[in-house]
Length: 75
Picture 1 (cartoon, rainbow, N blue to C red):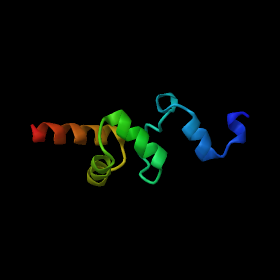
Picture 2 (picture 1 turned 120 degrees about the vertical axis):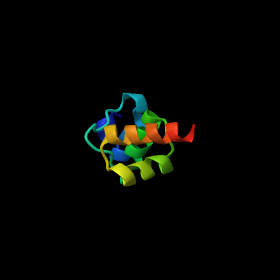
Picture 3 (picture 1 turned 120 degrees about the horizontal axis):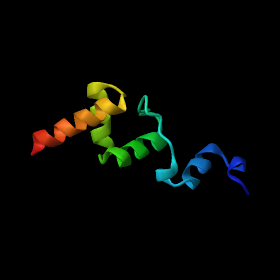
Picture 4 (picture 1 turned 180 degrees about the vertical axis):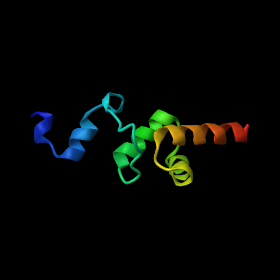
């Protein structure tokens, strides 16, 4: 069976997370796949990602900057 014959959710889980390409324009908080992949990529928890998106919007670069500032503030 090929990936094309699997439902979309199964196709995503069948591909290693590091092989998946994320949309670098926005972080889609409604997508479990995207939030999980962004959390792994940014090294944060889901709750930290959600707070960052709420604070600065869904731009990955702005979220990354926000998370970095939060980390530095906690030091």
